[in-house]
Length: 297
Image (cartoon, rainbow, N blue to C red; front, side, top):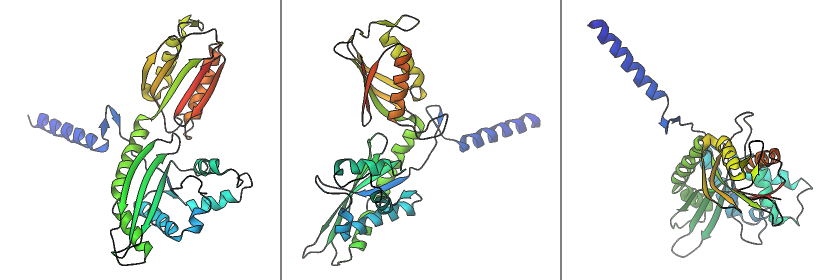
């Protein structure tokens, strides 16, 4: 009897210890990975990202305080000012390329997330105030991850640094909690993209056309491939007709499972290209943010 009781105690301790080591979500272990973040200033249409901080000391102070808040919470951050100077030294980025400059510096940052910070400083007789509007975007897809507004409150001081710190204090915790929750979901369940399959007006193919060695319908071949290549087989078909097939939620991994390198929409589009070529099809592909457009010619 004592032996059976001892065995039961050992089993219970083993079960409790195992349960404490990992937290299951839908049968998979949660993996919490903090994103690398770069904070950039919000720019209105026509404003140049390269000069906006040089011309506004208040925005420089606010951007620095936001970065410091993230650093203090253990996040790895990319210094926007240093990255800006490095890119400015590259002759490839000319002053005539304003519309593309923002995306170029973001893509070359090495960060997972960029936080766009709109800084408004209000001076009045009843006190001065800093208002921050923070929006976090995943760099690979451009999807919004977190949005928060922080206000310093009105104080009789011209120390914009203190007001900016107060505004950051009032929103950073909620902002980062939301951002981390969304990013952890991406790590564990993949990032969401959309894929549209269509046909050129002169194409001889339809979704009901038989293709490949097995003579399956094109729509069936595409779904079988998507089932195999979507992250954890997670995808959703919005609809299929003879002229198009729409996947409105396909999950792709944050990292390439083979190499460990960053994985993005472009790489998934390349895999689709190779698959369609294996069926003997010629296609065109266009990528806009988190959406891939495939056109069968």
